[in-house]
Length: 118
Image (cartoon, rainbow, N blue to C red; front, side, top):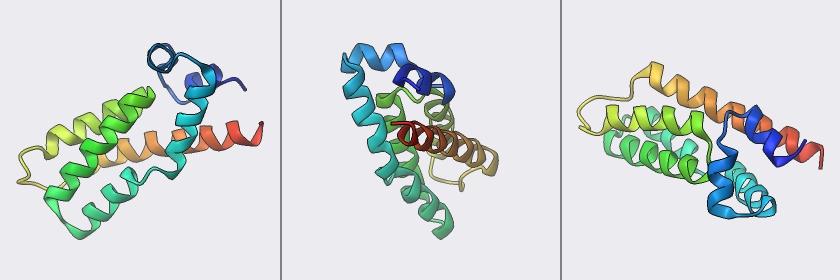
């Protein structure tokens, strides 16, 4: 699997990230770093604890990370969740959280498959 094929598999925007990072080797390096990124874990912890400000910050952080990496489906889901949480007066909407979770898990599965083929 090529890095371009990985991006197709995970609903990413390869062309966008290529425009920023310029080389497949850089895209690969930074995409694989997502495996260790703590943004999603921080979001789930904030949701479990009911901490509204942390929910917003974590969703916003995840939106930024996914935007920089060209993970479009995750970026869109995290963006919707961020906007829902922006007023910080209601907990995260479960349907939006589920969309973020699904996109996150799809990316992790794709990255694991990519690594296994290397």
